[in-house]
Figure (cartoon, rainbow, N blue to C red):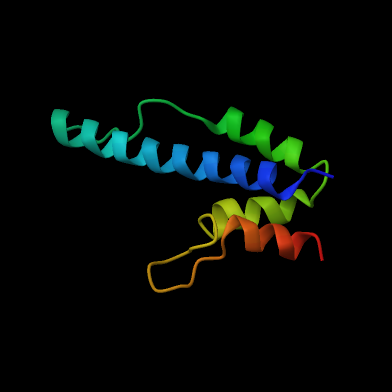
Length: 92
């Protein structure tokens, strides 16, 4: 079983990379007045991390947390389900 710290580090790295990608895309869009919002695509890297984590956890639950729930915070009004809390829910 992957330990909680390593699990949370992987999820948090994906969340931070996603936020960085979005911000970079917005800056490029603003600077060049273009509709292109992302310069590169990290889908393959994210798929690989999810596939590794799915050795221990259900892939659909991981994808739901990451993509559907936006890393545990689907909108600004919702409470954040932290990676630690998500891990705890997965290991119950």
